[in-house]
Image (tube, rainbow, N blue to C red; front, side):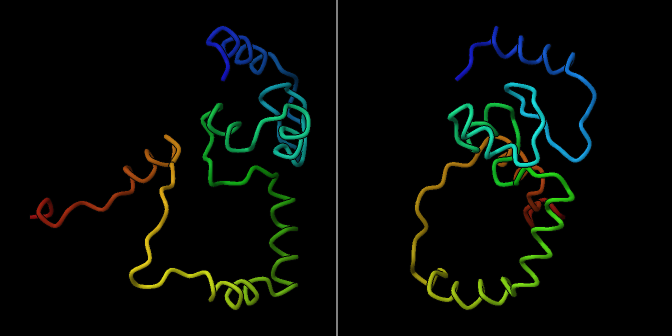
Length: 126
C-alpha cells in the first residue's frame, strides 16, 4: 500500500489535474482518463480492482464505468436475454437450506453502508 506522503502527493495532483474529460473516468493513480478504468489499472499499474477501490475508499462491489457505457452493457444484456440465462444457470449454484457461506471480507465502505442501512431492532421501536 502507499505511504501517507505519496497519498498526499496524489491528492494534490488530483486537485490540480485538468478539466474533466466528458464520458471518461479518471485514474486516481496516474490521473489519465479512461472509459474502462479498472482494465487500465490492472494492465498499467498491476493492481486488482479491489485493491484500487480499497486504496481510494471506493465501493468495492460497484463497477466503475461511465454512464453511457453502463447503458450499453445493460441494453446488450437484456437484448441477449442474460437475465433469463442467469436464472437458469444460477439454479445449480443457489444456496440451499443447511449450506454454509464461506468467509467474505467486506470493505470498510461496505460495512459502513450496511450499518447505515441496518433496520432497527424491534426492541428499539417501542
